[in-house]
Image (tube, rainbow, N blue to C red; front, top):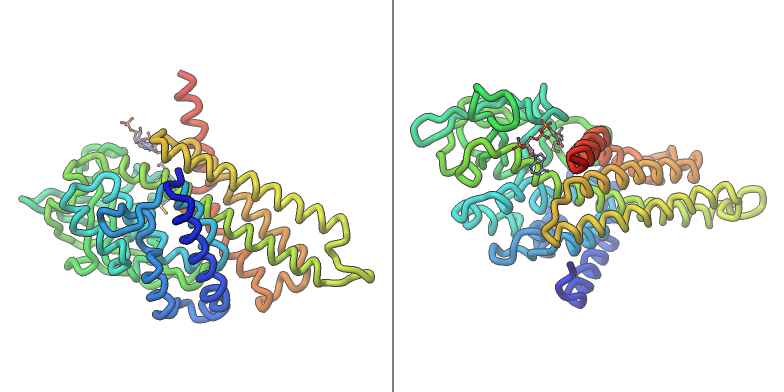
Length: 383
Ligand code: COS
């Protein structure tokens, strides 16, 4: 749903200008230093990028899902590390509170998330619990009017920068599955909470992940999201339904950028006396990439519109995430091929995108988990 096309166009234009004038020139520097400069982060905050999906009542832009994916296409036209910093505030790091939080939790945290004053982070995965999220072992034991959390979370995006964590922990030790899990908001400075070393990753340099360790971390009972025990897994799944549409949008935006670079190179690079773009084998790779991007873009927009209509989009979100992230991998692979030797060299930037987008097929649910979600829903719906 697009509320006001004119306002949206203004927003998309300002994002696109910011991306091309400010972020694209910084890509190599951020990859080299593994750090987004503070002045760039300040500009992101000034543009409102941290609060795009936070409701207007809490100081955000309150974008609808359709508007948000269009903004997502625009911000993804550069290194994914940039979007990663504000993506958790719009997505998995805040949506638990937006979707299921109490009015007090929303009042207290959302305004500061919307401005980027605090970064929200999502702590679901553990050393022994990744795809099988329902098997997580981090515990939260009730002691008076507090919960005491113990356990370790792994690969937590933006943990080094985070001010708060949405933590999924088991409040009912007797229940080993999803229904024993609750979700909490835990502040970074809570005694007993510590961070591991920043992970060395294949790509997305400038975006950080690390372990988050909970050693008798005591949080008031008021930090239980929604004030209800046993529904934390469902909160996490609802958050991921939305997150998966956002990753699909990021995949589309990145693929568009990569294809644009490949087209430019195909027009410039001459072999056998003419631009390589005049050869049909190169044209086939460009055409396949464009058609697949178009298909993914349509899927993302459709899933977003359905979510705006209030429909359950678990299946569509999984379809869009699976197709768009796999598509992006194929587009990046073809682009390296079109660039040839230059595609393998760091200075042309294509190999960096090739590594960066590999993550899209893994985080917020691997392609294989999306297949399971789709198939499970199909079989259930068939009765
Ligand atoms: N929205 C709301 N509720 C949902 C839901 C959704 N999208 N998906 C599942 N649920 C509910 C189910 O209805 C079920 O509730 P009931 O017991 O009341 O029926 C409960 O949650 C458990 O669901 P299910 O039985 O499907 O859970 P499984 O343990 O089989 O796990 C998968 C399902 C594998 C799909 C889930 O663990 C998953 O998504 N894993 C990947 C996690 C992930 O993406 N990790 C990335 C880390 S974040 S970067």
